[in-house]
Image (tube, rainbow, N blue to C red; front, top):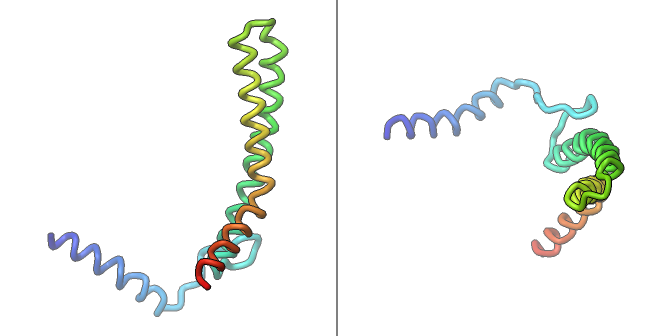
Length: 113
């Protein structure tokens, strides 16, 4: 029990001591410091776009190769179609993520009012 109390005190007081010492903000995105949640979400979405789009493109190519080499085998053809479908869904979700986040923000703003 004393260990839990000590950890709780460290977790509560630790950040206050760090803030009091004036340490710089370690979070940066595109050379700019991340100050708000909106900045952090924007940084994460940009990173997702840079990561997911090339991977999904590779998966589309792989699905095409699977489809071409399935030679009429129904199971292999189904796997190839699923690979293509999920890759396209991933690209669509990543490309529409800004719209989805704006929609969530709008819904949350309406709930607050």
